[in-house]
Length: 129
Ligand SMILES: [Zn+2]
Image (cartoon, rainbow, N blue to C red; front, top):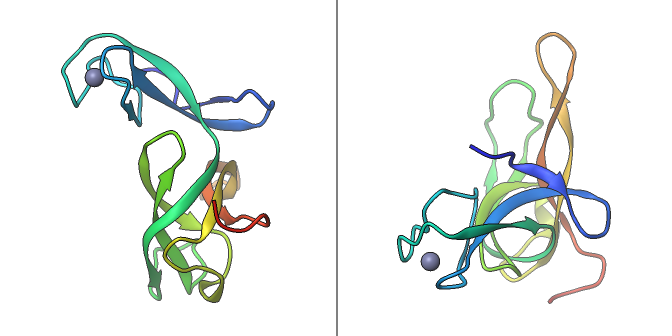
């Protein structure tokens, strides 16, 4: 399996998905075969920045290391991929259609005190896309 975190065109860390060179649909993570048309020809693409909340829920009970409440959202990225992830902003800031940005960043620490890197969504300061 290839790396799921890379560097996007703006120099920021991003997730690495794939775009099928046959049917042009995007997936995450990059796979050896397109899940839509079964073509073996996909190329890596950066999944960064703009998306919109498709749906969301507010989590009130969570595993150790997560502060509650927080928003867990299903987000449609501009690249054509829908991802589920935590939103860094408080629940009152998120609604269906809210513009968000995907950011790869430290999300906490493991039991040994090492930083854990993951992705979260942040409400866009530029309004809806
Ligand atoms: Zn395809």
